[in-house]
Length: 290
Length: 327
Picture 1 (cartoon, chains in turn orange, brown):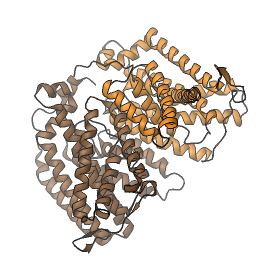
Picture 2 (spheres, chains in turn cyan, red):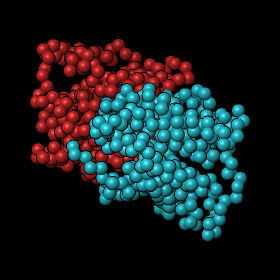
Picture 3 (tube, each protein chain N blue to C red):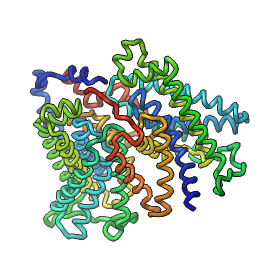
Picture 4 (spheres, chains in turn red, cyan):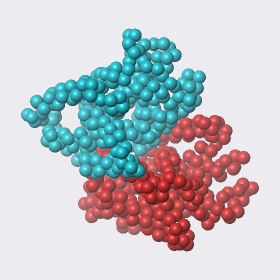
């Protein structure tokens, strides 16, 4: 019983984690909490669905084209909405992403309507893995594997490439980074491109386990933020584990304490953790001299 | 980004008043007041409802702007404060039988205490961490209203009849004037707070907590004050809202409404008093104007949000101030 609940929680948690990772990549480099991340991912997912269903492309083709779409989408959003706001109050940029969130949602509504679609998945009909007698859906294993691969890839990129190092420098101190020849606008564009890419992959992985409609990501976005805060926003592994912990604790709270209070209990846990560790469980305190 | 540059950019001492402002401001305020007083004469029922709603949201925005615009603390639980104020006022009036004009401030004071309590865990938190913690606090408050069925009626909501003041039943026009009176009081209060010792302390806390602390400013005390004060505004507005719509339901006081409040403050202009009014009016009136556009009111409203932010990052009021008063 409890093992099943934990597995179910992990499955939900890794969906939060995918979105959380996309949010955090943008957040750490640009300080902007992207409220449009969910809808950007939704749009990419619908694009992938269109490729699969209407054009009849193969899975690998559709996913790779959709990934490029996500990447380009991130750059376009950054150039049009975010770039003019570099140097403005961060809250202005956040509200702009909120507006974008509404725009993308209505846009998708105009194109695809408000009915639900079933997003095909190559893993749906595979028999679940048996781990110590507990069935684990293949899709969950794939989701966790993809999350870990993204974290590994991002970590390598941010630590080993010049571009990545420049982006980290820009996130710590824009003035000094600019003096060292790092382009702030380029760093920001790359961060948004990566955010769009990872968000798009998240959407494609999320869609088969729920129905695809224009509100695909609405519920996940807040959960992803909450899980990220719980784990610590300045560590990708922290965000991943925080989101998994959030998924598991939601499931356990609703089964053992009270289904109707599950959300409230989860948030009480998060607040309690934040009182003890204001930067999340795995977060490091950012030292700032001002 | 770097604090030093921000501090260097601050006006040293008191901002200079251009000569034109001396006359323009009282004139504008008088004109606005006269228009607001005369509004019920020329408006139909629905328009008056919208105007009252804008006034109520303006009250919330005034309070939230003290917290977010001046003190730099994000809150995503103001919809819950708004809701607690609405429920407290409604219950004190219907169940405890208090007169509306007594239960309204009493409900607001109760919510102020809750707001102060919310500030305590928030003291150490910043930015998104604070946003999520306050969001959680809001979810918990909303859930308590929902589950305390004996008192609040739970998900079924609470239907209310028109309030009475000294035997006189308050209709739509009466409620409008009551709201207007509170908005004027709220403006006066926020103006005084922002210009006084508290406002200065809050602004320094926003710039740099270290600098504030080294000037002897008790950061925790001022943050709690800001939270409590903005909760007071939100709750007062909630008490008015309950009797404007005459039916309240815990579902209406959700995160989306909190985000809308925050948007009003930012669209109007962070750290400006006038911006709170403009932002609330924008949020209530613009979607109504867009209602006629087929299929895409959301699309246009979202685009407007983006356009306003991209071209006026200081908000509508900040832009107007720059254009009119050149500061």
